[in-house]
Amino acid sequence: MQWYEITIYTTEEATEAISDYLHQLGAGGVSIEESGSLSRPRDTSLGQWYERPLNDIPEGEAEMKAYFSEEGADIEAVLEQVRNFVHTLPKYGLDPGKETISWRKVDEEDWANGWKQYYKPVRISNRLTVKPTWEEYEASPGEIVIELDPGMAFGTGTHPTTSLCLRTLERYIQPGDDVIDVGTGSGILAIAAGLLGARRVLALDLDPVAVSSTRENVCLNGLSQITVMESDLLSILDQVDRSELGVELPVQLVVSNILAEIIVTFVQDVYAVLKEGGLFIASGIITAKEQLVVDRLQEVGFRVEARHEEEDWVALVARKP
Image (cartoon, rainbow, N blue to C red; front, top):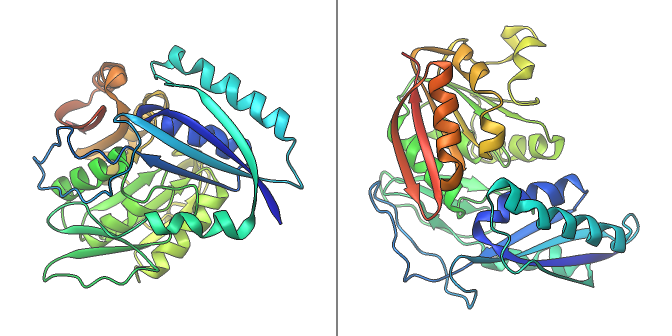
């Protein structure tokens, strides 16, 4: 089978929004390669390691590739939709960069496996390492290894928002906590929570492909305490019997690594599902949108206790009094 490969040159800050839109358009896979520059300042406050390979992509920029089946896609229509979406990003405070878009035809084998050569074990912190299933890796004593097959469209731990959220989660989670992961994607945060000692974890995502991917990754890591369900944010909590959720409501911790504009829409629901003293870890927030999220958190009644930043991204830690 042949596929249309669309290449988009943009900025690192715009990749998550564009990736989400490409997935909505029906992309069979999305890959992202960001700048490999090691000269830029790095936040090491949480003990993180950086082992990303060098490349020739300018600092702050990114190269995205999306794949659409030749049988089901009108390439000209898809290109027009992508161009229009990228052009609107400044309205949301995101810099689209060059906005250069091109395409070509490729064989399925070329894209389905070729990207894997760039995905190697990544040391996220002194304790956490994310390892693709096809790579050999020998863990050191006390090291927690997350086995992951992310598929083509989900987080691998290398993007600043994911690695930042993982380190923040590691810092604040307590053994025995019940945790809800909203917008789980590949399940990486839910799996990390389970490996870090969570009693029960509920992983939620609106995308059925993400739900399937998460279930597979949960099995890869041998975790029985994680329940994976399809849900539009936290809406599932009002639609099923609580015994089906796995976690005991209210919970001690909610974590979410999605866009700021989405976070602000369900802050009230997070507040309602947390115990008194419970924590909400919100990541995926571009610095330009940080105040928007802080204002909403405080409006609902949260107390923002900490912020952690990497490059242009922020993770906020808010407590329910």
